[in-house]
Image 1 (cartoon, one colour):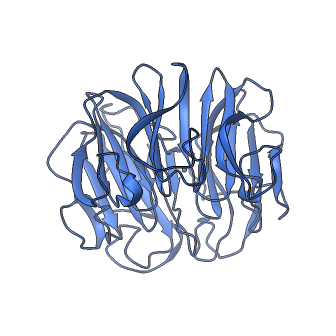
Image 2: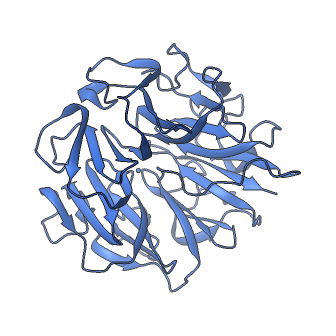
Length: 372
């Protein structure tokens, strides 16, 4: 799931006069849009009036966001304590998690959250089924708990597992591994384990039942190949370990995969997709599944991407926001509920610095941050 996952783009915090506004749209069945109600919206609506938001990450019907002052906030579904507020009460407006002011990066999985502080320490909360929090237990946590004592560069919370890159560039994983998504065995782990050799890993994405990682510009995948999401030649639905390189190219930059599809950006700012496509979520102008990367259009100005269950959001280098895929609850932000199999611009703003799509499989919610 960009990161998510590891975040798509970050605003330059603390610039005098800068306004970082938070917007949300789509399904709002449990208040996951943070607007203080449960009304769906098919166009972006500003969340409150504050202008100090830095980054946002949607899980499954909940969201976590960090402000420029280093505080962290949450809202939406909370059945597993994924809001980190010490309880399981749902919230329809942002609520601060604790009082800390050193939060730096966050990734919301389906029902759990991983976050890194400015000192590089890793924290987790929410559902802990199969040890997806990495604290050595399978006990749910409704407040942040520190994971080990190491320092980390990035994290990615998936459906039932987690990936992270340490400050030395090594790649680690934990949680559900029954489909091979942890690369080393068809087994689950409740504490971080190194899942690939080397110390030059730059990007990791924990998907639904699969994992992706980049080192030296090479893209690697492992786990379940449902709908061809691994981008490999193995049969769709086949479980594969260990990591296998996707093609032979060495210019991959980032990837997002929350469902059974994957969208990736290369260093030349082209965007590529593969996997499940029944709602047009691959952005290729059709609904045909693909088992290997296909370029979306011919443009070379894509900057960041976030996939949801059946929806994709992407920001261009000109800071315009684009969406495609399912639109049953207005999650494309286009003011309607028409599905799109090709990118459509979300509004007319050219100030977007971050965007995140919900992984909930039955309806979609989205959010993003603009920087004026």
